[in-house]
Length: 212
Image (cartoon, rainbow, N blue to C red; front, side):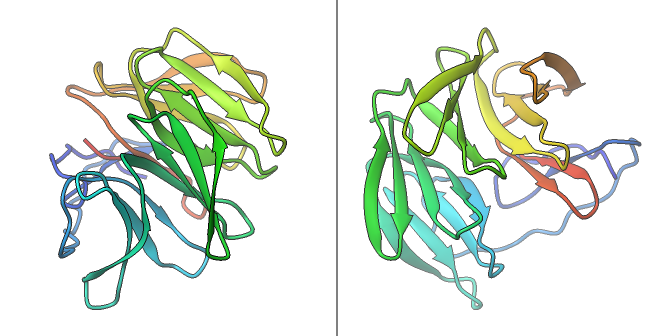
């Protein structure tokens, strides 16, 4: 339930948005070794942190000693998300594809997306993707069918769902955070001076986190 000023590196700080207040609080740094251009991140159901190491063209898992283990290689990994079954999904910014890693196998589940940045999975197993240059948010269902749920956003980047199923979208150029409800209505949620990248939502505390 806090709002703090942001820091520039993914792994050195968060902006924290409250659904209720705007109090400031410091955020502890998490040192991670062996990263080269870290981008999106996701936490598995076992509490393990996964990071898209874009310049290294890898997705890595952070071990207890803060070193990393490569779990997947791809051309430009950006956004990461897990579904309820524990499958890992990876958006690839430059190739425009979405990969699914399940029980050691890797499959391409979507192609020809326009610079997909972040990706998030809802409780029904649908994937939502932000297209950076087009300003579109797209939905990919379990059958691989792609539909557009929002358009005209300004360089959409990070995504996060709240407990009510509303989707939050961070603008990488304007510092805006949009809210898209279950009916597809888009409203302004917050405005920050500077640029934003990734989002995460704590279901327990109902707090939205953003990196900048």
